[in-house]
Length: 122
Image (cartoon, rainbow, N blue to C red; front, side):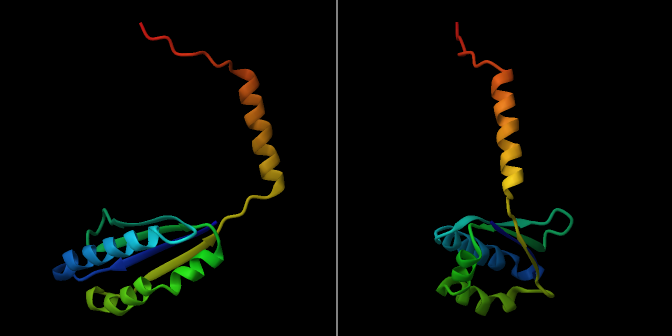
């Protein structure tokens, strides 16, 4: 899985335009193949800083995202609403076989420790 985090400082007077633009971008991106999550958030410490959090199934899916028309339009319009530089970070998350095996052992232990009881409603 690929995780991308970004910060977008926006011009206060164009905040509504930026929010509309980012809502459109999030909606279009969520419909893409391999997109798990694509959300913008308003920063608590500065409401004129928007935070981006996205998750992709693979590097290939993220690369496909960069080649879409909505990304091209977004990048063309973005400089108009910015009030500084965009900062982004990309992380790759991998699960090793050791961690997968450990997770399965813990799950098995929990299942054997607790019995399932159907909820009874009176």
